[in-house]
Length: 161
Image 1 (spheres, rainbow, N blue to C red):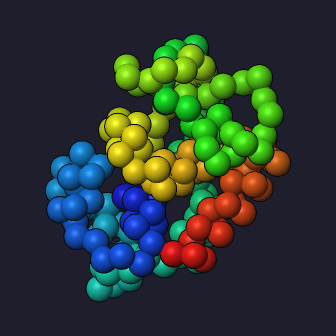
Image 2 (image 1 turned 45 degrees about the vertical axis):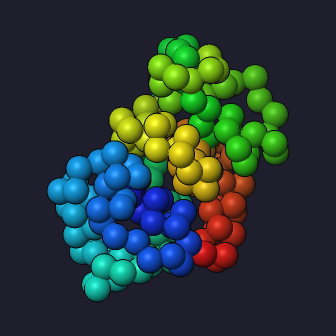
């Protein structure tokens, strides 16, 4: 999922597996395996060059919360996610703060396990990717309104990609 969100954040720019590995701090073999699984699932084209945006949106809407379930955990320091991070942060008012546990984070909130251990670090280097990852977490842990807003924002970003 992290690899797919990273590709989506690149919009229509060409990407190479080695670049994804460097930017996400994930091994090249993990990237390759992820791409191959995504091709089998129909999320990436058979030539491994383009994202199937409709299939990704369908998966985010219908499967993400079941494949990557998450419940908010104990208070910890970290990087904001879900409705606590941009872009939902400006649209949803909540006393609950969700964070990915991260030593360099500056906010205390309830822990949300990231989709990959290196996700917070990768998000600090790419704001577009950060927004997509936080929106995905809103789908994983949000209430109905938060999920709907997150899906609408993801859909808009994918259309503009």
